Image (cartoon, rainbow over all chains, first blue to last red):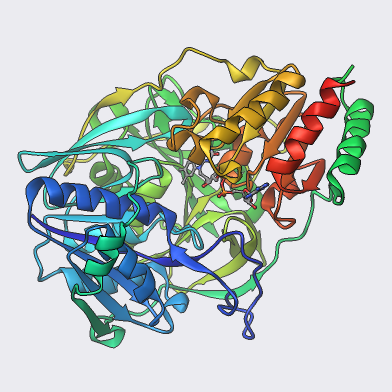
Length: 256
Length: 305
Ligand SMILES: Cc1cc2nc3c(=O)[nH]c(=O)nc-3n(C[C@H](O)[C@H](O)[C@H](O)COP(=O)(O)OP(=O)(O)OC[C@H]3O[C@@H](n4cnc5c(N)ncnc54)[C@H](O)[C@@H]3O)c2cc1C
């Protein structure tokens, strides 16, 4: 099996965000970076598949130098090699351009299976995986919460609304986009972290793979207007609890 | 401006999200047509042309076939915008269409300002305006972001469509969520645990508060995915939709998929260390505190009442 998993590095969502000077994206200073949550499930599933069928597992990530830290985690989880597509301006690219870069890399590699997250936590577009598959002309299934590979066929469950699932079969080569809860992503062990340091981590400048122009542009980034405007309580826990109890007595019937 | 609205059908029923699509068309003041792979037994109350493919032949989930039907319809309608719901149907089909049409797709649109769609970034902490550079733009709409002001009463003018296209994947059937156990929809108080509880043992803190308030405890998705709570306790789009008298969200950031399941609660209290957590937008009271410290104190005080 020749497997590719595509990951993205995203900021911790609990960060305090600031808008950059151009007003077009968030400022990347002072942020803690991590692997996109959905991609952790993609990496885990790819590693499990590789462990079952043997073969070779490549992890690909587009971004500046710092994304190598996140790639090292994927390598420590069990990916065999890393491909870093070096791009300091990746945050300006739309889903179509990102997908085009990955498809350009993948088109000559005959991957049997490609895993991506169903969306990124920062942009949440949920497009990249599907577009890669369309560009490569292979089937894709989105939002999977269960994955079985057998006899050159994948049987997956797509998650729909309200807990309903759809069972889908597709032949390989195929691409799947992974949803939260697909599996339990492993924690890299210390020996595996050490081993990961020796694994191949190739860098390719994005210009070598990018041959399309963007379909869209983020023209401005801003904070949403605060509409809620509920009461904010802060301070010593006992005092706050008393205040909250008084509010509940006044505004609800639950303490009556 | 012309829009094509893509309605959806599941388990033999038209999905309610069609109202979001119609509200959107109303808001942007467009000349709208609708597309549906469905049946005449359950039609949208849409005033205008409806391009209808028979779900019996085309399947409820068959992306390649639905894509071809859409491409044929688009060739006739020549819309400037094709609009889906940001649902499991929409986010799966829209990018396939976008690629085929070489069109820009803007996902999870929450608003349109001066004709430019606005989409959330970083769990709704930020928003961005996205300008499309292609002749046709594809949008998927966040559930509930566009609401109909009044019940629609239209009657569609049906044009039947079909295709000989076949799909690359095989739909083998639906699997229902397992039921049984606690029924959150009946609880008048729900105290929910989010990832902020940190470890499974802390479910006990949440359950004690729920008990003191004579309610049930619920959970956000990561807590259920980690198997710290059963699936029937999950609140949100892929879990339960609840509307208790009181909802207490502990260590829950307030992602849209969680909010969709609890925003109709009568009174919402959030307990979170992050003052900027999006849950603050729907909370009547936001307590900025570490839940591990605060919740036990609150529980003791309530018990002592
Ligand atoms: C298609 C789809 C469907 C989904 N369906 C659902 C669904 O049905 N239900 C659902 O819940 N999610 C759903 N999700 C996931 C959703 O997007 C979020 O990932 C999820 O709701 C986050 O859960 P959380 O708030 O518990 O965790 P996080 O987002 O990680 O937030 C944890 C919060 O805890 C706070 N915190 C941390 N430590 C403490 C502490 N000691 N004291 C107090 N606060 C603390 C943090 O500030 C943060 O705000 C779905 C996602 C997708 C893509």
